Length: 264
Ligand SMILES: O=C(O)CCC(=O)C(=O)O
Image (cartoon, rainbow, N blue to C red; front, side, top):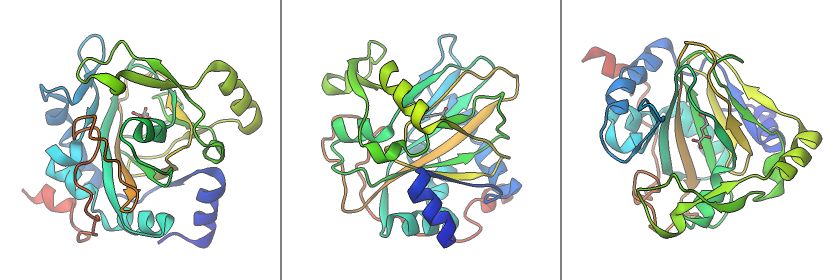
């Protein structure tokens, strides 16, 4: 459970970082699936120009270890506390940045979840787990604290890189330089750093992005992005690896839900 101060910090800053939540054995259980997930041939894997996997979407659907992560008892308890109710998984992802791995432009996850997937309210959470040690050099996620208080601040632009779905989903939601100037001048930026096993929570409207990785140390982060059960997206425009079809409430699994995979 979170302390009252931690919950208050999340509400005020729009994010919260909890180092040391997952043990090295739990991180190892998840890390062992990175290679097989990155090798998937399907459209759920976004790749760098030279072919390395950058993002694998829908990992909780394809890999039982990431399925178990969504039910991790600490993740579930903290998320229920921050949301004040039960939740479903809207999207999961594995974001891997190798040396020179590409930039993730400034954005708000809710902008897409709302405009394309049809989630009504910005009441969800982006939940991240660092699977590698993350430093200033290997492309940490950088956030604009308090930006979650401003609602949606991005603009729709056509994304020519999107090939695997049609219609509204071809839009990208960019935050324009003038908006970034205003936000960064007012709120500054914070980087989410920490050892592997760090858990973090972001408000669905928190502006964030990441730069390139300038060292050979890989940076992998697993994301389980959730929304309260009474706040569903039912446009079904995008495939299920981007946007939920299963809206059932996530329950907590046992404490050994991840380490049991190390016994196989
Ligand atoms: O892990 C990162 O670099 C940021 C990922 C992200 O924000 C996204 O894929 O929407």
